[in-house]
Amino acid sequence: MTYCVAMRLDAGLVFLSDSRTNAGVDQVSTARKMNVFELPGERMMVLMTAGNLSISQSVRQLLSDHVNAAGHTIWTAPNMYEAARIVGEVVRQVHERDAKALADFGIEFNVSMLFGGQIKGERCRLFQIYSAGNFIESHNENTYFQIGEAKYGKPIIDRVVTPATPLDEAAKCALISMDSTLRSNISVGLPLDLLVYDNNSLAVTRFVTIDEKNQYFQMIRSTWGEQLKTIFEGIAAPVWNAAPETTGNVLSSAGKASMPVRVALPPGIEPTTLPAAPLQSLAQQFHNKQQ
Image 1 (cartoon, rainbow, N blue to C red):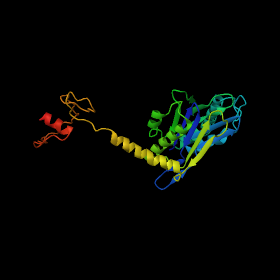
Image 2: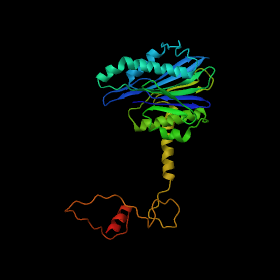
Image 3: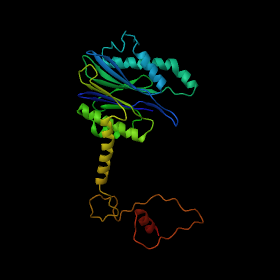
Image 4: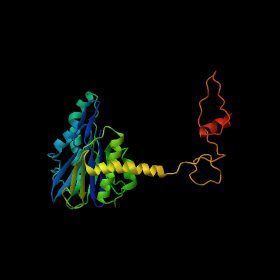
């Protein structure tokens, strides 16, 4: 498994990928999943991959030399849309070559990719490419894409990132998103590759490989956890069985019956009688009402 996230912002692009490819009981392996196609001053493109590693590596190997029907390569495509089409063509080429053999061994043809960048003369663009070679493009309504183990890191991005988010803020958010994923899923792991691209630079602006000793990422990991705990502890506890006039933090109100779905006792088992005592929980309230 893996986790990669890419963001398309007014100020440029942010790409972040982990490097774990296997997290078995007795074997943990890594492989870098971010590849840069750069012709400084003319184009800068980034490809990140998830899914079957052999398929991803085959696509990367063939992509640099592939020529489409119009005579274009990834290096000469006139715009990012045509460059994304070339990536899709290579994915289909690998599918035609390998899919049947993989299926014979019970292996699904599974690959997904994030591809983005800028070619001189047009704006930054970002695409998500699927196993069939088809793709979708990021717009202001969906300013980021994720592939791999995406669910743990999604909530923070949804709450924070907009097209107007500055690049450093977006990079910070991407790292927090990755930290949330690392904490919840062993199949995602360090080191990380982080690339930040300033609009119209037409070359890599900032890049870093992040390991467990990276000072900023360690600060992110500790500070984010501490702040979450502080915020959690600052949220008021719920008010149970509140009087009708109560308006603050009411979870349940007196007189409004909420009953769980109870499974009937089997024959031969008699319900127990609770001793007379002040009710301590909502469950005890329910039980008392049924007596």
